[in-house]
Every structure is written in structure tokens, then in C-alpha cells.
Image (tube, rainbow, N blue to C red; front, side, top):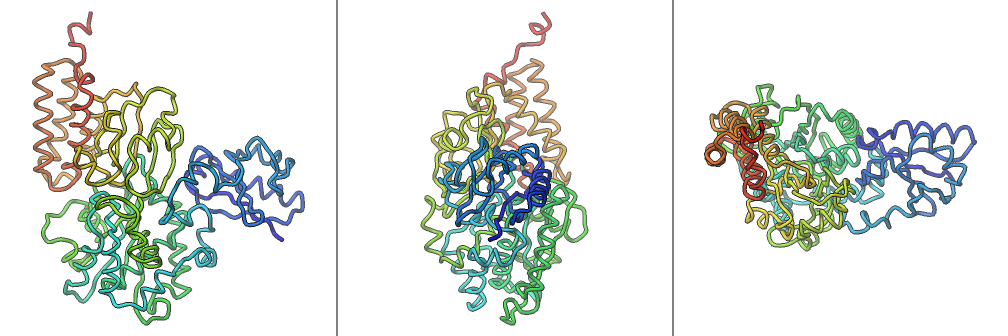
Length: 518
């Protein structure tokens, strides 16, 4: 029986040498005349172990990692084909603590299957949700998603079912599904992992969304920095179309839905839904005033659903297992699972899918293992470059939309970037303002000018120039930006700035210029 050896084709694994490892394994198989093949899977999300090589034996996957090309000959000599002992052997991959503690619903296939194999996808439950959806009325699909409690995983946490119902009820001869895959937050990689590791789940989710709302065309809008994701998604769409999953008769139902992949130039502001729509239409990526909402007048002035990758990729399991199954996970109004993306100065960085409700401290210390440097954790920024910095005093905060909001924080795209006690929070606050100034579309004054003035004010504080007065000015700028900006770029920039000032005041009281000179 042919033995399968899995080597990830995920961008994170490729950046660590997975291509060289796959080539070396192929050469060893040929040189030794072995009955084995190399399968290029997605990543499991344990990046400290990448490239992670797995061998399938008696239905189990034995892992070795992190593997370098120079290790390959030694692995075969040690009996890789039989799961032999070696210094890099990790045992059964599913039993690794980081993976075993997860609840993988959205990422159930990621790292397990060949991303471009329809047979693999179907063998692991793929298209069960779509098969159910094609037999249902649109309103019943919307109700199922609404009852599941699914909220937008792109940051705002808006109920997905309500958005879908608005588009279903909107009048229009043409409706669209737009997948916001413009993943630009620092420390986030879940969207990329899905697109590279399980593209058919996103295709299935978009097709269900189209059936639910009456939309017949979908677009995945991603960024040029994701060449591997773009290539995989483009190929997956072609495969799905040829198999009758997309096109003029979805799964032979007579219902129409097709989609295509579009690439943006990587402007952060195009992650905002209306700027994204402008870019899709071939216009400059600037924010539109609302109302009208995209659900009423979106792409090409037609009713449009705009959902994040993880939102859409979570729909198939809901349609397959039912609303109650999904709703049983989580806490409060935060239902289901959330893919935590743990990054920064951390021992075990990667993707960890779990039900809402874990405390921030447990995520950082128990799952992440603390800092990679071995120093004390000083702060965790949750929600990307516009997320608040949480100190250890707030590590009891449960991972829940409302719990974070109550402490002036954001879950956002669920990225966590960890900092040790050497971090300068004044510099981090300055970076937030500088980031906003660079990425602003320029349409509204609070964002365009406020961020530039914010950088200047932070510099004056750092230089010891009237620090108390400038701290007050920085707080006033934040207030203006928060309530006066047209979109979340300017409106959320105050979160990292104010949280840094509030929780780390010692970093905003530098030595005055005259003392520094001495």
C-alpha cells in the first residue's frame, strides 16, 4: 500500500523551507525505490514546528518537526516509513497538547487534506452543508445561520444572519456576495490559512450565502501579498466549476452561483467594506459615507453581502450540523468558535481554534507558553494594529466581544501580538498614529490630519517637551478621531494609543530634555 508523506504548502511552512524538504523527501523516495508519495497539505498552525512532516500509518499521522532538508536522509535511515524513532519525532500529531485542546470546526480539515482534492474534501464532510442548503428555501437558510448566533469574524461582530436577511429582503435584479479576504492586521493569518489549506470550505460557504440571499455572483477580494492563497483559490474555483459545484446549476439544483478571485494592491483601508467595494469597481480605495449600507446599495449599486473569510468558512458546518450544534459553543452573545492567532514575542505561536470564553491569561500563558524571550509579559495587543494593549492586570478578561468592549478593547480579527517587559509603549502608541497616517485614504479630516498631529505629539512627549500638556493633547486628538472619523481606521486608532497611556503611564513620562542632555 502506498504510504502518504505530508509536507505543508502553506506560506508559513514555505518561508521556513518546506519546499526544499518536500524536494528532498521526493528524491529519497525515488533513490530508495519506496512505495510512497508526497502530499502537499495545509498547515496545522503550529508554526514553531514548521516544516512539519507527517506520515500516515494505520490511519494515524506521526509527525516530525521542525524538519530541514538536511534532516531528511537521517529520517529515512531511522525508519521514517514505519514511524521510526528520531530526535525530531513528535509522536501522533493529534495528541500534541496544542492541537488536542482545540475545538476545530472551521479549521477541521486544515492541515489534514490535500487542499485541491475534491475527494479529500468530500471524505472529510465537505459539501454536506451545501447539499442541505440546495434543498431549502432561502429564508430557511438565513434562519439557520441567524439561530446559530454566528457573528462577523472580521472585527465588528455584526450578526451574520441579520446581514443576510437584509440582502434577501432588498429589492434588486442582481445581488452579490463579497468575501473580504484583505487580511492586513499584524499578527493575523487565519484567512490565508483557510485559502491555502482548505479553499473549498470558503467556496462552499459563499455558495450557501448566495443561495440564502438570491445572489448569483461572488467575489473574493484578497491582497497581492498573498500569492500562494491567490493561486490556490483560483485553481480551487476552476475545479469546483468543472465539478458542477459552481456555475449555472449548483450541485444540479438549477440554482445559479459563480465566483471569481480579485486581487488588491494591499492598501489597509481596503479592508473597510466600502473602500473594498470601490476598489472592486476599479475606483480609488476610499471610504464611502453610510447610509446607504452595502446590504442595500453595495457593489455596482446592488444589494451586497460582505463577510470575512472566517465568517463564510464557518457556514458549512452550521448548515451540516445545525444551528443548535454551533450555538452550544461559546459564551454570552459570542457563539461558536474563534480562531485565535497567537504571534509576537511568544513561545508557541500559531492558530488555536476554540470556543469563546477562554481568559486572555490562559491564552497567553498556557496556550502560547509565555514569551519566547523568557522575560515577563508586559502587554498583549488584541485585534490588530488598531487593537487595545491589555496589561497583565486585565488577563482575567474572557475572550468575548462584550467582555473586551467593557474594558475598552476589541477582539477584531482575533489576532494576539505579545510583548515582553522591554517594550516601550510610548513608541507603540506613536506607531499606531503613524500607521493610521500612512494608511489613511485621506477622505476625512480627523483621520488624515489627526493621525499626523498624533505622531508629532507623541514625539514631543518622548522629547520631554511639556509632557503633561502633550499627553492631554494626545488624548483630545484620540477623542476627536474616535467620534469624528468616517470609518474604523481613524475611529479605532485611539484604542492602542489610549490603552497604552492608561495602562502604562510610566512609559509616557520620559526624562526631560535638559536631564537627558546631562
